[in-house]
Each structure stands twice: as structure tokens, then as C-alpha cells.
Length: 532
Image 1 (cartoon, rainbow, N blue to C red):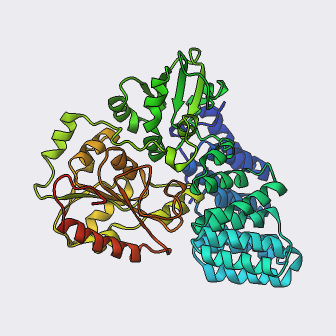
Image 2 (image 1 turned 45 degrees about the vertical axis):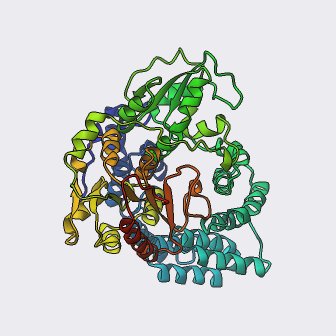
Image 3 (image 1 turned 60 degrees about the vertical axis):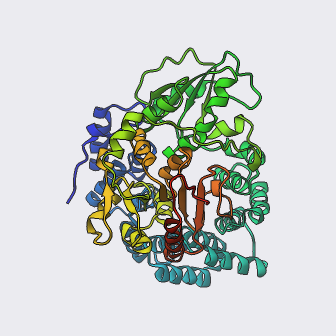
């Protein structure tokens, strides 16, 4: 059944009114064209309104099921911006009945099947294309490697590439980039760098290659080399910040004395928490700083950095008074970060409200030690983000089975839909106070009453580390650049211990963590650190 979308409730594309969007949607439904669908859907998706964009595409396709070109555009949009690979696969199968020799569609179908979870089916279609359409073998190989990598089969991707290179087959910039990406995901970042460089020589303006190279350099600890490439990334700032982006960007070595600088949160909560440690250096250099962050962080940062003006995205801040702007992820590098030894690692650098700490402490179990748990990242919609979240997340059942029973009080720190998994848990009780946590300042106050935090790679890891609390990170097999390729410790957070998975499942590393936790609890004493 076709369902209409209430456009009055969504964030609007730039320059479009609610009435204009509703009219454009209705006109498209009545008289659709492939280009019209592409343009309007992209406008909606690009302002991160993924649910509304998906609904638009599905409604248009449902109303015009015999328009094959329209369906193919819709399939491409769904594959790019959503996880609806069930629909994509169905559309491609329908198209191939009409155009059975279109190898490009077969490659698209093969990638969609792998993304949908039908790896065997996808590999079968890839094999068919490479056998029957040798002129498209290279294109099929490029997509095969990418599909396997995103599905978590990095070693298989590497095997495909290694065989391709060994057979002296033509090597494109995409295949060179694929090899760099595969090696980086396999935590072989130094080996990845030459492949990225070769890809850039072939395709110097490719943003995916540039960003991959930057992150591989960061993961290898070569921050100074990676920064010029990292700063070429596409900004992810809110539309409300667009006026600031015309300001000069603060550069390393710029004079700070007397300068009025607007610093803005560009990415997730974790990035802002991690890089906020450099705010005191900015201010001590003589700068006046306005920090624009999401509402979840505003109170915590106001408590922690009272000498900084903290505002949210929705606040109206005069723009004419600023001399320069800077995205928070660039702050460490502007302030001198060139190599791992330069990382500003003094903790704690975040502060809590004593009243909030006392309020949560009164609600916590009397049993000590108290251990906070997070098993999943935040809910995502965009395919690349969803796949990353799948790789970094486990379940409440899997984590709790591995860590319990334990002679400690367990405390939930999980927010979002995945918090509901606690309701099905029948083992050792878990204290859940997260309905009382309205923002990150509240969560920080709750963490102050804990003795250890165990979490997958999400913002709580950064929050606990920035508070100087012992924190154990359950890191996915293709760990984030900030944790490097190997090791149990991190220069970013001295109280952190890293447990690295070496396979797609967290089962093995969670078992190791369970053994380590039993030992930690047995020797725990008040004031004990994560590494003791």
C-alpha cells in the first residue's frame, strides 16, 4: 500500500519550502521521470532525511511498476542511500528478464545480493559475469572486492586482489584503491599507503581515494602527512552553519591572539568528545572561542570549558564578528599534532556537575565494583554507516553471556533502540538508569559513580576516557584509525585497554574479555586503574 509522507515534519532541502516539497512530491508521483526522481530524492537524502527519501522512492516505484528506467533509478537510489536491498534485488531481477545480457545490471545485482546477506548467490552472479563477459571482468572484480569488504570478508577480498595482480591483469585506479582499503581494514596500514598513492597518481581528484589515504596515514600514526588529504573531505556540518563556512579556515601557525574563532562539531559525539581536549590550548593562545555543538553535548562542554561560549545548532549566533572557523576534527592538527607522541593525553579534561553525580550515585547499587556496559552503536540509516555499525556492535545477550556471572554490579549505559534488548535478558541483573539521562552531562555524572566502563567503539568510550575512568574498548576487527593497527593501549586515553577482535564475530574476543574481567574484579580495589 502506498503511504504518504508528512513533509511538514522533515528537514527541508536548501531553498525549498514545505509547500514546495509537497508539490514537487505530488507532481513526481503523477508524472514521473527518471531524472525528476533522481533530483528530488537526492535533495532529500543529502539533508539526511533518509526515511522520507526512501518513502518517496518506494512510493514512486510502486505507482509506476512498468516504467523500467524509473525502477532502475529507484534501485540505484535505494542501494546508495538505504539498506533496502530486498527491493533492489527484486527490481534488478525484473530488469534482467527484459535485458538478460546487460552485464552491468548483473554486477549491480551481485553486489546487492552480497549486501543483502546472500553471499553465495552474489558470488555466483559475479562468477557468471567474469566468465561470460570478459570485457567487463575488471569492473566485476572491482565491485566484487568492494562488496566482500563491506560485508566483512576482508581476507577474501585480499585473496581476490592478490590473484588478480598475480595473473598480471589490468589494474585500474579503483583496484589500487581497493587494495589500499583492504590492507587498512586488515590493520596493515603501512602496507596500504603505496597502493593509495598509486591510485591517486591515476585519479588525483577522487574523493574516496583521498579520504582513504588520509585515514590510512592517520591509522599508521602519520598525522602530519595525512592532514592535507583529510582537510579535503566533504564537510558534514549542519545547514545552520553554512554561513560560517565562508570564513577563513584556521590554519596551523595562525596567530590566535585577539582572534574570534567559531569552532563547530562536524561529525559524531565521539569525535567532539575526543578533540575537545585541545580547547584550552586554543584559548591559552589568546583566542575567543564560540563552540557550536549538538544539544546532547552543550551542557557538558559548558561545565568543562567555562571560558568558551557554547551554543547549539539551533541558537542564533551573530556571524559577522568572527575572524575564522574550524571543524572540531581539525583542531588537534591545527594545534600541532604531527605524530602519536604529540597527542595531548592529560585526563580528565571533562567536568561533571556535583549535584548530578550525587543524584545518580544515590540510585546506583551499593555493590562495588560497578561496571557500565554498552554493546551497540547508535542507529544509522545510510548504508555505509549501517555496515560500520554492524561491524562495531554486538548484542546485549552476547556481551552479558560472556561477562557474567561476575561479582560486581552491572549498570546499563546503552541508549537508543538497542537498549530494549535488556528486556529479554534473564541472567545477572543490570541496573538501568538511562531513562534519567537527558544529555551527555547526565551520562558523565552516571559514569563518575562507576569503577569500569566496557563498551564497543561509540561515544561512551570517549566520554569515559575523557573523564579519566578505566574503560575497556571492544574494538571491531577493522578498528577505527584512532586506535591504530595493534596494541592494547591508546595514547588518546591513558586509562583505556583495547580488546581487538580478529574476526567478524566478537565471540572469541568477548570470551577473552570475560576472563580478564573475572581477574580484574578479583583484584579490584577502590582507585584501581584499567591497566593495573
